Image (cartoon, rainbow, N blue to C red; front, side, top):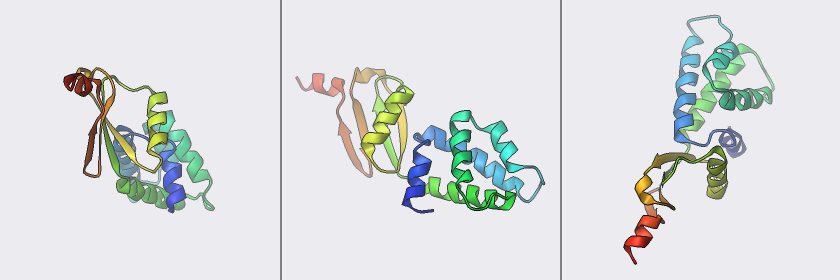
Length: 146
């Protein structure tokens, strides 16, 4: 998978929490490749929320081959690519909406996952940590410095 495929994945996979769920289901699905003749697509549909299932199936449908073996290979590739995505740690005062997560993801402007922590004591703003860099742009910090 190339950079564009990573972008395809992160178009619907935004948070570390979503990533953990998807990885768990993909690992279970891949393990079943050698133990059952079950349709892997049916297993995914039963285990994933629609917000992850539909875009994953759409991404797979773009592949040249759609046999069960091709699906397993595709899932293995997705799984390995997810594990390479960098993590952006974000602490907010409130639980972000899906719209906020989408906006934050677009602002990051590169394939990555957002690890969200909620800390109401921040009052507003955010604390961001990425690749060893830390920035506290919270209202709490601003008020402490006044």
